[in-house]
Length: 385
Image (tube, rainbow, N blue to C red; front, side, top):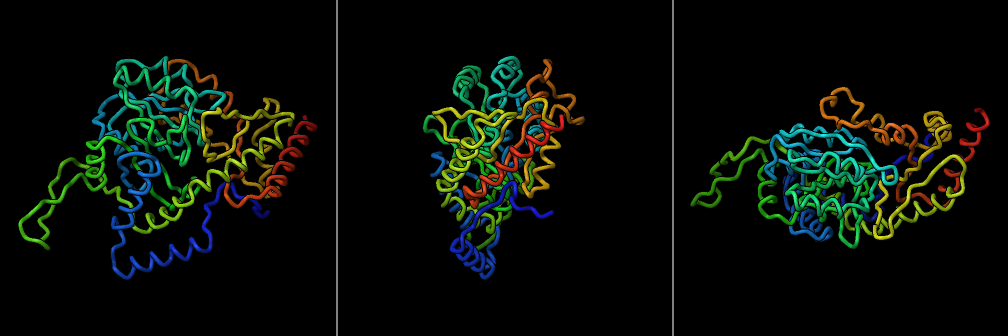
């Protein structure tokens, strides 16, 4: 069996590859291959794109999240996080010295539900880690933010899926106190590995830069060219980005608007072809948002076996995904971090959702093939019931 359509795939044109290789040759020649001029340029241009004052590059979104919580001064505080996320979100809370509280999701957005947030927003909560699932910013984001502002609760955006997304004209990464992006290969912008912190808070930005470099600052001396060593400020680790990642990131960032526009075109085609298909429900997109469509999700009727459908698509050469199932609240290691109420929505939706291939090179002909195989597979499963 040969894979015809990958679930996700980063795109680099011929000119992009030439430019990237030329810049990599430059750093190999000079020897400056970590945390140099290209990282600084990537930070500057990323901050300008998001519309924030500061951007701090890291080696992953996970480290960006951990750094952000520490830089905000959060310690032994409860931090709300959705169950529908990669375990890295929960892990970063624990590693920052805080306590995750895993909450249920909204069936319309697949993001954390407003009800779960309000039910758990007590005096011990220091922040909400808001995962913009699949690239959608929740329509009730500003309503919750207003409540959090009154209670001095921070909003930390987990923007792993949300490069180029916006709500009411405000870009993801400029909505909370701090935003954290991922550049993993499956993301809208891909560098291989890498992350970015965005904020308008100068103190937080300065602290983040210290924490990404072992928690130290350079000692200053009177003589130029002399290394006076470092001063330890706070124990931390090496979370720096390489120059290679930044070079690739600069190339990807230059195409962000184009990438998001194409992803929306692909999503619109999926929606048009699938809107009248029996056995599935499509997710809505609020008019005041720009969706970045990290993934295109739909929900199956309860009588359709999701795993059998996924297998049929795979055998037709179509990769697909059911991220993030099993959800975090069903992971044994997180049993001490659960909300009191049952996870009614996620227990239902997470076993019935599926995503289709989403990447720049997909054509309308490709979409037609994928949709035809999906509909055909659903019909076969319905006939076998």
